[in-house]
Structures are given as structure tokens and as C-alpha cells.
Length: 348
Image (tube, rainbow, N blue to C red):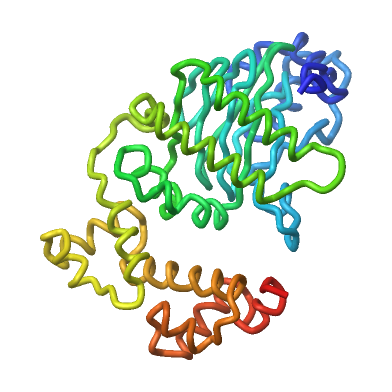
């Protein structure tokens, strides 16, 4: 962590530009070209900025930018470049932005907020966002996790009822949501130390432990939900609707994936099939059938990786009666047949 206190070469370059073009940093930029153009319009005599920025400034960051495609690697960590212009971008994975020291500006839509040491934002995939910090003392840690790994690793935590877990489920299943979950209630020493441990593990010499990193991130979420659930708020939208049904709906679907039907689920909640179907679609962006297919397919993949069960036994366990439909859905999701998947990722 001591190394993070020092400005690296890219940050020193950004700091020089910030001193010269400070007024251009007041709002996020769309891309590097627009920033270069604005600098040139402001100062015709200035030295031209390079065609490429000192760090990656992309409109959409995909998982393969931070995670090796074939590696057992579910968690990554990166520090935010100080003095880098705030630029609009999206991620295809989950992020926790944690203010380790100092502060930063965080933007979603037309809203911005300055968050300080100990604060964190939980940001789901496909959220248009921007971040900016303007002090040597600012250390902003980004904890990153694959979307599929997040869903699998935190399923047990997300079974709890509450506004935080409700919106975490929405982040997982609904790609149209554009908000983050924000905590700014002050530094929690245990969370602070957990972030440090994750950073140290991922930057240690020698082999890194994916299991340790996932476990530490789960500890972070567990503590955050246990001690600060009432202090975590939505940022990016104006109101919260208390319903809390989605975590319970998905929990029941997971527990009874082999037999569950929409009529049975509606009866469990005392609702009509039509109302429940519309509610699920509204809250997750997907139909009951789609969610059940996702739950079953992910469970099948987990069993292929971690058990020696035959494919017929797996199909029986997850409730598939149409083999061809299962094979089609599995290949659509994982781009390979179940047997290939087992040979590649399964137990030796």
C-alpha cells in the first residue's frame, strides 16, 4: 500500500496537464479525442497532447481487460489514476470503488458526489460512470469481480431480505439499471483492513489465491450488510421502492429448481400468475422462464466442475426433461457442449 502513495509516471503526466487545463476537468469527458480537442481550443500554443492517453480510457471495459480468459481468476484490483480526467465508461463486471484515503468525485447520469475515506460504491455491470481525484493523498481502490462469479459467490448473502440485497439482485439480472449502492457513513476499520488484504494478496510475489480473494470479498460484503445495511443508499436514481420480493423469489427458484413452476411460485406469494410474471419482468428485466433457465444452466455448470455425476443425473437434479433443450441452452451460454466444459474445467 505504501507504493500506492507515490505518483506513478502516468499520474505525474496527468498532474502536469491538470495544472494547465484545470477548468476542463470540471465535467466528465466522452473520450480522449474530445479532451485533446478541448485543450487545443483553450490553448493554441500548448504542446499537443499525445494521440493515446497514458492510461486506458475506454468507453466499455470487458472482462478480458482485467481477467485472463482461461485462468481461475475471479477477483482483480486496480487503483484509480490520480489527476486522470473523469471519463464516461461502462464495465461488463461488478466493481466496488473504495476510498482508501483522501476523496474522489463519482458521477452517474447527471449526478455527482464527493466521497471520502472509508466510503464505497457498489456498481453493477453496464452502469455509465466516471471517477476523478485531484490530490496526491487520494488512494481509490477498485475491487473487480466477474459477473458470473459474483452471482455464484454471493448467492447465500443475497438471500437475506432488505433494500440492499433487493438492488444487488437488480444489478445482477437487469442490465438497464443505472445506479450504484453508496455508503458514506465513515471509515469501518474491519472493511478498511479487508480491502488492504485483498490488494496485498493480488499483488503478492508468487502464486495468488483466487479462493482467498473471493473469501475476503465475501467478508467485505458480509460486514457491509451486517453493520451498514441501513446506511447504504442508492446513488443515481431518486427514490427507493421497498418490495424485497426478488431475493425471496430467486431463493425459492434456486431451492426448488427441479420442480418449480410459475403457478406454484404465485401461490407461494398469494399472487396471480399474471401479476407475478409482470413483477418479475419489471424488477429483473427477464421472464420467469429465462431466470429458471439461467439458474438451472449455472447449476449444471457448477455440478460439471465439482462432481462426477453423469449428465443424465445432473439433468434429473436440475429438473430438465428435454435433453436437447438443455444442450442447446448450455452451449448458448458457455459456447461449448457440457462434456467439453467438464473436460476443460472439471475435477481431474
